[in-house]
Amino acid sequence: MAETIGLIAGGGRFPFLVAAGARSHGHRVAVAGLSGQTDPAIAGEADAYTVVHLGQLGRLLAFFKREKVTTLVMAGTVNKARAMDFRPDWRAARLYFRLHGKAKGDDVLLRAVVAAFEDHGFRVAGPHELVPELVTPAGVLSLRAPTAAEWADVRFGYAAARRLGELDIGQTVVVKKQVVVAVEALEGTNACLARAGTLVKGGLTVVKALKPGQETRADLPTVGLDTIRLMARIGATCLAVEAGKSLFFDLAPAINEAQAAGIAVVGLDETNLAADTP
Image (cartoon, rainbow, N blue to C red; front, side, top):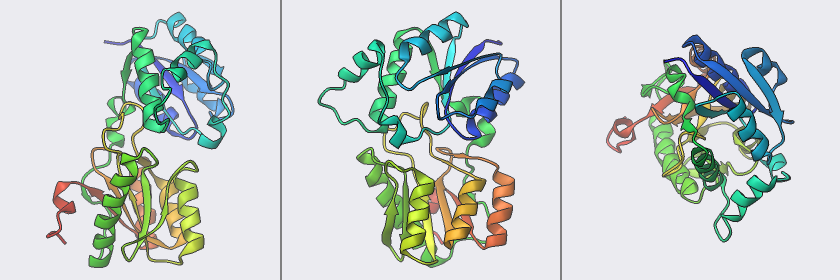
């Protein structure tokens, strides 16, 4: 049945894809953009639109209730360094103080936000429920499969990424010859890759994995055409991301560019992570 979907839109193309996907299924879409983060052009994909500052939880809830939203979705990037300077209203401050004594990594904060929306009667859905075609498929996605050395780096990097995720730090690890070159933290994936390129020239493998126990409705790992282009600039030769647990934007053109740059791309699953597979 058609309903009104509430979309909390961060930066990048992802919110546009989610809004278009929801509307293609006959849903009405009420979009709340984040000041200084969201492309204002998203208003053209919305049936109702507002802009809120990070921390204005009360205004966000009021907008969605006024628009008779039943299901909420979060999509898009948030500049984490900028987000550190948010000024919470009383609702957000109350939520934040509930976390007193707890680590405040991405996943902890997102779980608290999801719980707050659910407490107010909203169903929180993962964006992949509206655009399932963005979910990364399993297997070697490029014409070139990873070499034996790249597979060794992929498996090493995957284990490292999972450990990084256990601490709720980041999702991305850059590896060469089973040595960690760079890890993602506050700066985000692209800055992590750029830093790796200044440290090591060529032969880099990039691995991105879901954090153990991660709140998948709010923060799935994402890669896409921009990832491939940046990898080509820094001389990275292999990209591995979890199949079924991540999103791959612009898959077809991204694979075409990967092949032109000699980059192997693989969607990881239990089979190809096994040590006895090629």
